[in-house]
Image (cartoon, rainbow, N blue to C red):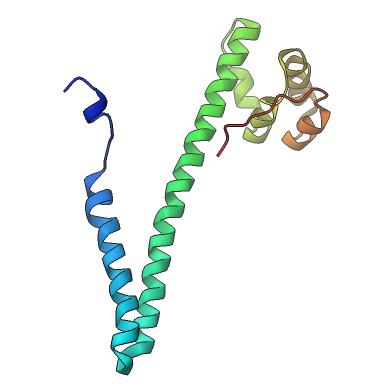
Length: 145
């Protein structure tokens, strides 16, 4: 494997970036062009263009879905790290007792409130929304997608 540097650090997925997306774009442009140039089959080309657009849109939305899924994994890792820093032990047992919305909500609490709200979430099973409402000093997350 090559050593990473500025010239080779960008990663492309060739089937996606160089085949699938360009092909969809070509089909979309062709469909729109045919709407105006083939009036005998205009309705078919309109439907073709709409279908091509929907497939392209779905492709782009799936990228967003994957990004959010990745962020959720990072939120869990942040929880594990923070729990370890505050309590000096692994969080596996505690994490298994919490729902994701509770873990995500705890991110907005500073350390002193984190401990209290975590205990409340475990004992009273309060929801993520209730955790957020209980926070007195909000710790913002300005990096979420």
